[in-house]
Length: 173
Image 1 (tube, one colour):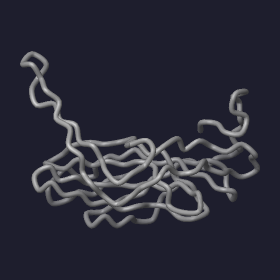
Image 2 (image 1 turned 90 degrees about the vertical axis):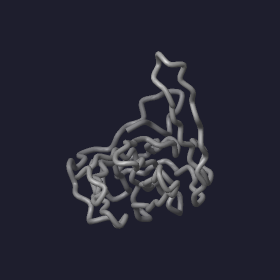
Image 3 (image 1 turned 45 degrees about the vertical axis):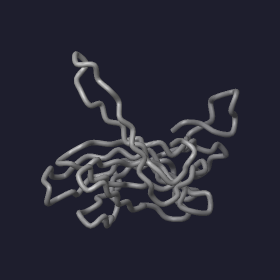
Image 4 (image 1 turned 120 degrees about the horizontal axis):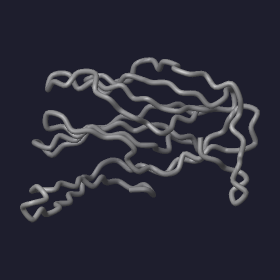
């Protein structure tokens, strides 16, 4: 849901295109999550849009739907919520990555190993704060939903300027 809430919607197409497919929609309840604020950046008056909290990355493997999205983590900052929905037991588990003072946005997830025993993933993200320019990194989330230390991929070297005359205080990064 783009505006936050306490549920996720799972959509399943039950047959292929040639056999009159039907769409099944299931609502899964979980803890409340909210739309994050826009991100700050070093030496920049322009805020960076984090957009909303719709799922931005997902994949299915061995009966588990893995997913990630932006989420408000407190004091106006954006973090990442990573979750796993077990389609067999109809259970969901999630954890949040982030810290007050830094914005983490636009998560993209990829499996490390595709087995039922190891559900670890790598989550790529963009990040920014008043202390540094926008940059890109990744973090591992292990089998127990614990996050390891994040790794910097590309350090930013300047602030992003607002270039939309209709929205002079915010821009996409």
